[in-house]
Amino acid sequence: MRRAIEHRSIHGLRISSTAPTISHLFFADDSIFFVRAEEDEAVEVSNILRRYEAASGQSISLEKTTMSFSRGVPRAKRDRVLAQLGVREVETQEKYLGLPTVVGRSKKVLTDILRDKLSKRLQGWCGKILSRAGREVLIKVVANSLPTYVMSMFKIPTNFCNVL
Image (tube, rainbow, N blue to C red):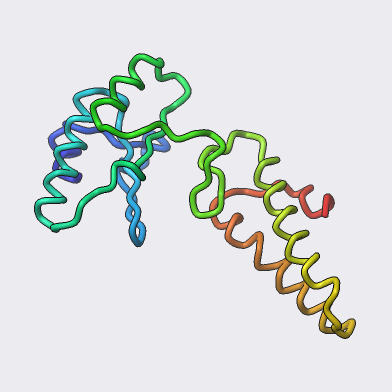
């Protein structure tokens, strides 16, 4: 990926004009690539993935692979790039690691997810015989731990606490 960036055969993502280019992010068993929605860049990514498969002996599951596009990419161009890579486009309602794959300006989706998870966890304890202190500890632990993961990736609106 770095060589492809250096040779300008793919272009990564820049969050500002002074920021470095981001071409990929690697997780435990997942990878995210940032490239332009161009057929030649799709060919280059496909070649990189084939070289990786040959070198590592691992195979990439195209059935599990999805692609997301910026809003301004025309449908015809999306279809050509998807066909070139042999993957499908991510649906807006899909989730990755428990969070929605697409979040717009409104964080209502995130706050709804947090509220639902919290209420489901707390409902399970309604029938348990716990002291007042025990219930308080459980509520504080869950109420503090659930939003931590979401807040590590997204800025949660300040009025979210008032909604709960």
